[in-house]
Image 1 (cartoon, rainbow, N blue to C red):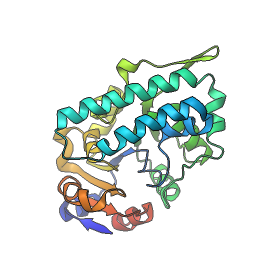
Image 2 (cartoon, rainbow, N blue to C red):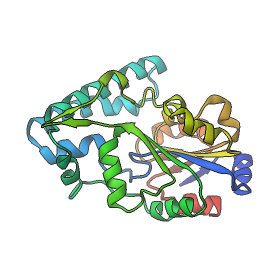
Image 3 (cartoon, helix red, strand yellow):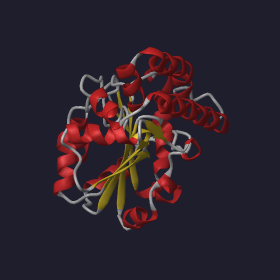
Length: 260
């Protein structure tokens, strides 16, 4: 289902070529039924890694989708979840080969129309910034596997480094859904984005709105994919996104709405 809450900004973006895209990865680029990038490696490894991951996921995922929680408290909870999750992964992720192999049979799928959308952005030289609180190494490999990692794409995420048979990541500097905001984009990229007349933002949780600066909101068309807790969260999504695509809509719908 499609809910259009701001026709003015939609019409403005339709008539512009000088824009950029800032987009979330998990369950935005991928389907609502896909596993998140943070869950792919534990699913592949199984055992204690999967057990620990599931315990945390079952506790924190409902809290991520609960918009009755006070904002600052939710930020604290989401940071806590990210820290625990990456600490678990660091224990079991012993080589980059695990990342590549974990994608072979992973439950991770592009939304219908994403390939065509990304190709269109590339052919028109439109910058696409992908921001994710997931595992950047895995996301990069997935985009390469799906043949959509074009030169106009900038991926900003959490990346593991590998030395010997160990992986390292600074949990103090993690990008979580609680702090995934515009300031995390490198300054040189922000200078390019700031010159764009409009921004197309796509995400699957309300917090994704923070991927832009508040002063850019007037020139941003924000599209929210709502695939979970639809009845409970439709109102808050409509209050925050200019367009809400509910119940497993596709990027074919995005292209149709924008007349690409």
